[in-house]
Length: 146
Image 1 (cartoon, rainbow, N blue to C red):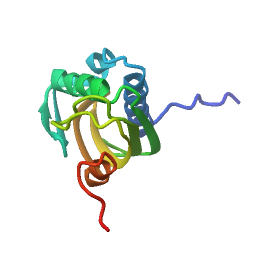
Image 2: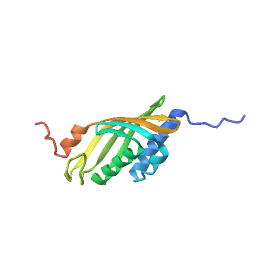
Image 3: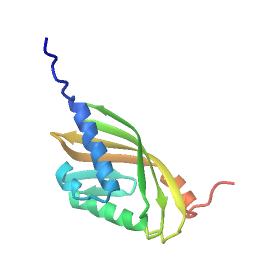
Image 4: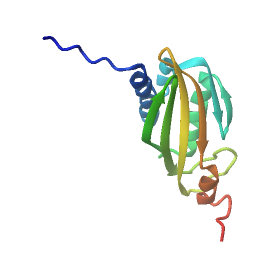
């Protein structure tokens, strides 16, 4: 009897797309966005709303220049329907201006959840919720509670 070859499910394919996006971004390969993200992509973020693939790439260019040692650690990836949810930690040292905050030279570690909507193998939308308050406290922008 010949065994059927195991084909990845749509959910597994979508998880692989999102995981690849993070892996390539970490290597500084923003060209992957041209392959994986639709041109009219929408991002709903605590850092503002970004419309379009080029805005996504510009955000990461700006972030990478402010936090050149940035690291994204994906802790969980869960997929259901057309959504892929990642639980992640972003860490690094802020050595350049970030969202209007002058360089602090301080390290931060920010936990978050990112949800991606994937349609026909393309990322079309993204929502995130991150511990921005904790990051601002670690950078010394907002005092820690006593």
